[in-house]
Image (spheres, one colour):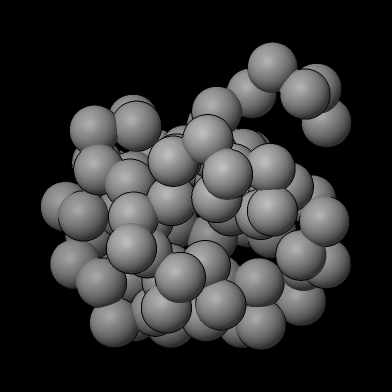
Length: 78
């Protein structure tokens, strides 16, 4: 994955790679479909709870989202 992709775009690409709809991701993470859409459009920053559920439920290594780097530049909601 390119280092130039935003956190929202990475989440969208990984969700689609797992053949999940926004609605199904909503069910897995407890966030509304609308919030998922906003995260994917970078309108809302995902919090650590969402990221944790996302990587666990989709079996994605944390490194794919570059969490440490994103946290340092303020892209993750606290």
